[in-house]
Image (spheres, rainbow, N blue to C red):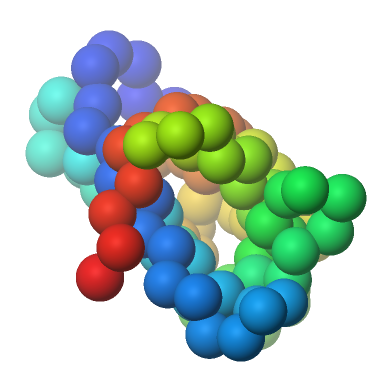
Length: 102
């Protein structure tokens, strides 16, 4: 994985009362990047987003917790292998970023 500072943006756009579009965009200090886009459902105060891994075609679920103007994310379940979502040495293992509503 890639160590060092990174720019993290989490985009959330409500679709219905229970569903929202979720985008996680990570840009690492050396130019490597991770991008995740999916649809999330609210569960126990957290947003659990699902997206198909572009390589394996298996589902990757991320859990997003919102705290004011920022949010944190972590892997919830499934195939979140970086090969499908990230360039070299990137990872969707978790992080915190500012919320942006597109």
